[in-house]
Length: 485
Ligand code: SF4
Image 1 (cartoon, rainbow, N blue to C red):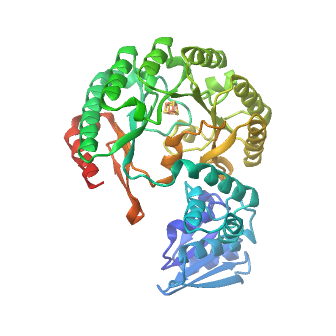
Image 2: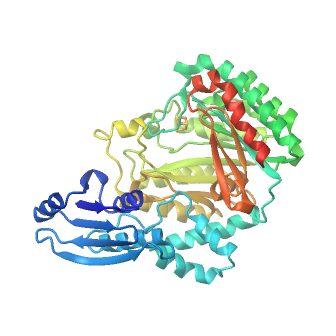
């Protein structure tokens, strides 16, 4: 495929939509007419976008003859110009290619926000369905998922209380690096010697942040310790961190306190007991798959049996809300493997199950080994998601939050399921972006929300451990933004 652009005001959006039909590696972009014409006459499908700042003309061209197939004109002053631009590109493309996505022109990470915006404007639910279907060309089943999720979230998110703040605390260490990981997480074997000094700095940041929050009279009511793998900390380190948190907050004011234990090979009875003692009421044990062969292939140091043992241990210690993350589309897995995983997760009866679609991120080892690793077909992963959904609903789990990522197989989605009364407040808040989350530690990104102005600001800490430690004064300086709340 070849694309001619002249003055295109929405180059980024164009690329996002084209990628739903044709891989970027197979698209040639040019600003030279001759080159475009030659490309089309040699057999490439052609698209031209020409704009003079006022009007934008989008045309598709037939391969070989270079004849204009269809042409549409948009005016910059039209309402929702961006949405209409994406819709026209999508429609022109779908006349010649099969769409790779059921999400139409919705390419953002948080599609549920659109439903919330419509509900905020008092648009009745029955009118939302056709609006999303027609304006964004989303398939009916995905529209249903959006509406169902938004309606389940709303009682937890509205009305907004600007005096409530969530804390995110990052432990960016893991025992090994998973094949698909793109997080700025550090291998304990290689960077473990920095962990004690990192923890010192993290606690200093926590002291500072809590002090700033208290000064402005706000309340911390939700805490999430994530990573990496927070249980990479040993027992003494975990006791120190959680004890410090407990000394700063009134645990009975905390609505939810999660530790993403994550990897079963880092969890011990003593660590679980420390968490319970310090008020943690939700943990994550993330198998991703219950297939031993796949666990080895993705770089895990544990088998499926260990996941079952750790889950039993966590119940025995008294945890009442446990999340398990799964990934659909892991290399080599079939629909039957995915079903086996879900069946075995259901047997363990976690209250939350988050079903992810594999995303091949640029910074992952998986991306580097794409030549040798065979990825599941889009349709296969879609079937996996459908089977998971049916099995989970049959045992009382329903979707309560969802998001999408770039580079997901089949341009699909991640869906968090919960049984009644166990939806994670933090997960809903982070997707909806109207609630302030102060994030601490290397790679952590705070979201400072100003709901009256309908905007939020992202304030990022340094990603690298060394920068976080060595430029710590700058980390604290940035946190002074809390005063603006
Ligand atoms: S456990 Fe999570 S953060 Fe750690 S390496 Fe695996 S994917 Fe990355």
